[in-house]
Image (tube, rainbow, N blue to C red; front, side, top):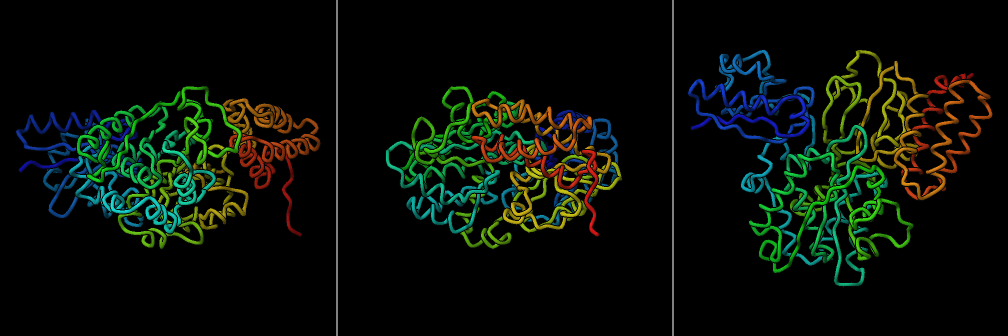
Length: 516
């Protein structure tokens, strides 16, 4: 019986040499006359250990990493393929502290299965949710999603069930399901990891959404910077169709649902749902006025469900286990789990799926291992390039949608970028404004002009040119952008600026206010 050795095909692992490692393992085993099977799995999300090689054993998978091609002969010399010890060994993968404390629901298969194996997917609970869904009518499916408390895993955190219910009851025979996979926020990679490591999960979630609202066609709008995800999705869709999970007779239900992937052209603003629809229709990606809402008049003018990857990927588990199972994770109105993505100045960057209610301090220290530089972590930008900079004094606030909104921040897609105490927060605030100016679609004046003027004003503040007047001007400008922009790109650009000014005034040359 051949020995199974797992080497990730995730693009994060590929970027640090996983392909060369896989080839070296095959070549070395062949030279030694060993019978092995190399399985290309997704990443476990322990990015500081990539490429992470795992070996099947009677006790479970054994982890070795980070492995280079040069390490491979010594690994075989040590008998790693038979449970032998080596300096790169970490014991049983499931016992690595980074993984043991997680609550992996959406990511329960990622890193464990062969991403394109339907047999693997089904053996690990795949399509259980869809098989439940085909026995229900649309309203019953929508009720299950509504009762679960699932909210959009983007900036607005809008209840998914309400959106689906609107499309379900919208008039007309033609409806669509669109997955927003334009994961453009800095420090985010959960969508990519899932699409590359468990593509059938997204396919299943979108198919359930189609059955729920009466849509017969779905689109995955994928950013062009994800070529590996594109190829994986294309292959997975073809395999799912051939097996009867997509097409004119989904799972023998007599109902149809088709799915295809469309590539974006690299515009950050197309992460906004209406700009994405414009791009899907072959037009320039510019934000639409609302109303009408996409749920009423979306893609090609038809009622459209729009959710991001993490929202849709949570749906199969909700249908399979029931609304209460999912709802019982989390706190307050923030139900379920969220894959938090740890990036920036951290010793252990990677993906941590936890229920809402965990704190930044726990994520940064217990999972992230503290800063890579060894210096104190000064700030964390939460929720992408337009998210607020959260200072150390707020690291113990539970990660909950309402708690973060109350302090002028957002959780967004769960991306966390850490900065140590050498970071210049005024320069970072300037970058946020510059990013907005670069990525603005140009349709509305507050975003198009406001962001450009914002960069200029911050430059004058940093240069100590008439600082008080320019601070007042910047505050007024942020207020205009926040309340007058057509979409969240301009509306949220003030978040990092205002948070930097509030929590790090000394970086702008302002004396901090001290309590008397």
